[in-house]
Image 1 (cartoon, rainbow, N blue to C red):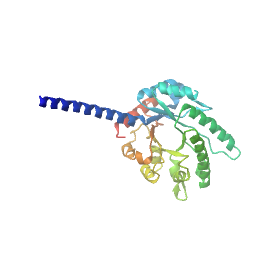
Image 2: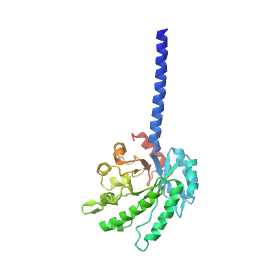
Image 3: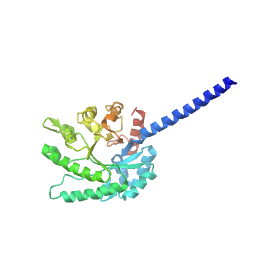
Length: 288
């Protein structure tokens, strides 16, 4: 009788342990998947034709959030902040971030540009986004270190406005920030060092830094914690080029400061919607 009781207790303990492990594993995987989203520039033509159907399809693919690239005059893809947020949520997506911006203003246009930012930030705050990223600079930022310093001062000012509304402001690179040098150092290094970490973060595009001849891992080591966002990108669909070692890069996400990864596709072997689906499937097949 005692042996039977011990056997039953052993089976019960194993069952509870199995449920615990299953539950823990499920939570871990869900948390892992939740920080991967899509930059909607990847499907820009579809968004122009039918934004509602396109967002619904992105949600069906298994993406967890979107980053917009269609802000204008207080609206996102022609919809009010509340409407676009609801569309995303109805499609199983969070609306977490957005690409938008303005060129460096002259002294005469400073107030006008800052007023534009006030309207834009209010619209983004109404939508509940976590970040706004500007993905470009005009030529003034690339011509001289003084020009870059003016841009960083401007970005710090925008970042201060964003922070007041609970939004993080950041900058997204291309390759030119790494191939342009001032005083023997890449423009991007100056930008990170000159910017105020309390007012500005960086969205590192993994493909463009590689295209610019630099190693993302070196930047994570040199500027730990500054890269809250990554654009997870390849020449075409993720994995297509065979040159991007995403598995190795993801091993260093903690020191980089990564909170969210955003897939972006700009060149395609398939339709844009097929390409972003294949890219998500590829990423899930790696040990990210």
